[in-house]
Structure formats: C-alpha cells, structure tokens
Length: 147
Length: 297
Image (cartoon, rainbow over all chains, first blue to last red; front, side):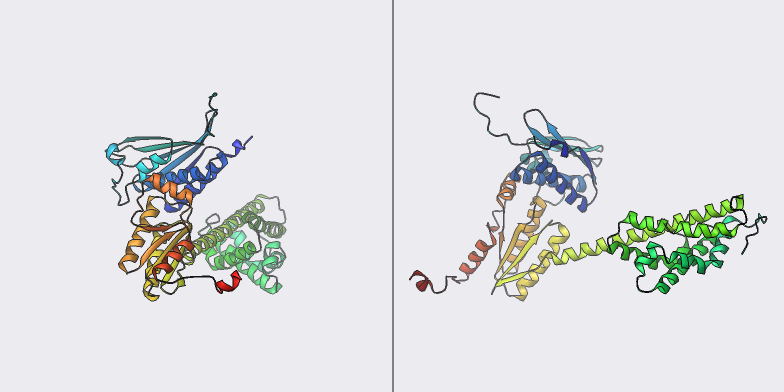
C-alpha cells in the first residue's frame, strides 16, 4: 500500500510572496506523496502558483485549503483558494486568455484551468472569491474489459 | 541584612530590589557556576561574575520600577546586548530555544534560596511575597532572553534573504562575447529585477553579443516567471544582445504549453551546452576534437 496517511488536509495563509513559495512547496510535497508523476506535479504546482498569486494580488490575500481525495479508483488533490476581496465582476471576461486587470500575461485563471481536471469559480462582487481546482492521479490506461 | 518583617510599608518589589542590590556579589558568585553563564564565559570566571552582576543590577532596577512583569521595562535595556550575545553563543553551540529557556530558569533556585535566608521566618507572608515577586521577576528575565534570541534570529533571516538575492544571480562569461546566468530557485519580482540588472551590466562590460538564461534550477515556471523572462530577453535585445533561454525540462515545457504561454518570440534550447553551441556557431567559432587525425589512427 502507498502511504496515504502522510497527506492530510491543510490550510495555509496567503499574505505575501514568501507565502506563495510555501504554498508551492507544500503542494509539491502533497502531490508527490499522493503519487502524482513529475509532469503532473509540475502542472499542479504551477496552477497553485497562479491561483495563489491571484488570491494575493486581486483578492488582497486569503488562504488555501489543500485536501487529499480518494474516490476509490484514484487519488487526487483539491485546492481551494479563498479570499474575501472585491470578487470578480465579469467571470467570463476574467477567464479569457490574455485578459488582465493586474498587468500580467492574463493567463492565471484560464491557464490554471487547463492544468487541472476540475475547476470552479465561486465569486460575488464585494463578497470575495473561491477558486477550487481538483486534479486526479493519472490512471494507468485501464484494461479494456473492466472498469 | 535582615529585612524588617514588621514594616508593612515596604512593598515586596522594593524588598527584592534592595536584596538584589546588597547581595549582588553573592548572587553573582552562585550564578557564575550555573550552566548558562559557565558555558558562555569559558575563558575566565571573573568575566562570568561581571556578567552576572550586570544582570542582577538590571533586575534590581526593574524591581525598583515595580514593573515586574513588563518585558519592555527600561531596567532591562543595559543587559539586552549582553543577553543577546549569550543566547547567540549558546545557539551556535547547538542549544535549542527551550534548552536556553531551561538554563535561564536554572538561575531561579540559587537566588531564591539566598532570599529565603534573609528572613527569620521564611514561611511568613512578607517572605512569601518577596519570593513570589522575585520569581515573577526571573520569569520576566526568561521572556527577555527569549525575545532577544528571536530578534537575533529575525535579523539573521533578513540578512540571509538579502545575501540570497545577490549570491544566487552570478553572471558568467562562457566565451568571448557570450555570457550566461544560471537561475536557481524562485524567480520572484525582486530576484528577476536583480537578474535583469546584472545581466544587462555584464552585456555592456563584456561586450556580449549572446546572453544565455539557464532555468535548469527554477522549479516552477508560471506566467509571472515567464513574463519576467520575456522582459529580460526584450531588455537584452535592446542592448544589442541575443538572448537564449536554456534548461527547459520536459515537465516545464508541457506545463508552459498548457498554461498558454507563448514563448515563440524567445529563442530556446533544451540544455546550456546546446545554447552555447548555438552562440558559438553564430559567431563562426567551431569546436572540434584536438588531433582528430591521430585519434583515428
């Protein structure tokens, strides 16, 4: 059996650049512990980096909740980035490649969405934003008859 | 000295203060043999005694002011430096914070014993009150020591952060007209600013035509890092140098593509040696094995 007990749900603060580095390291450790491959680890860490920076820059800081998942067939990782900032007024626009309100490349939200399997944004102007991203350990291509 | 037990007008802190003042020499002699002072002042016992006296004086001063539990009490000011040096010495020899705290706590017993001896009846209320006041005072001393230790640590961390900024971004001359920066660690805004400045300076100083940014040591390339890279490349281009980004690992390459970052405007090579070969080739320099003919023979 793989050591699943090592990874537990955690909540980390996002309040400074140093916190971003800590979030990245923690996500990398969690992902490695859950059995994510190197490429998937890199994708997860990159997505976490983008979303955590959004929380910091646009949400004025907040926190991330990192939860290991197990649906019986596969294991995964859920990351929820929670802030109580101004919220996103036009989500469709914010999700457009290249649209930026912060002087960046405008790939944070849309790019992060492409790096994970499940992605949802819960936002309300003035009430804050919660971005949730889920990735599953890529299954070994299943044998034809079963599953 | 005998403390006038019947004199209720003298408060416990004042009793403690005058006790500390009058028994300074004896307390210092006893403290000098405790692990805390003995292990710091290894060369001369006299030094340890002097240091102990300074601490006793400070405690007496604090007791007079009546602010027994105030860590910020001005009475501690004269010994803060000394305490800081002592904790640093202990920390350097491998003591943990809690070990140091225990050692400071070890100062309590000798001095409380001395205080008890001052009273004809150590169980009487005035004696108890004085002991309690002294215990509180020593508890505060413990906090002050911990505080100085934390301050010293915070200062150290800040200094190391600054050092990291400079140390981690050396610009290397690889060949005549070719410079390289091996980037290591997190490329945040502050770091990338330092990288850009030192690279542009090197391009001018070395009259470099080619600059290689090697990102083998960068664990995560997100859109901000990519943007920093592109800005650096654009700036180098303005200075008349062609920039090559090397060391893009397979996992990073896949991530960059999915993230949607367009590095099309940036010249990339998978390894530093490929990048160097490209730069040399462009300058018409050919690298070949020496004595090729002989090795065939």
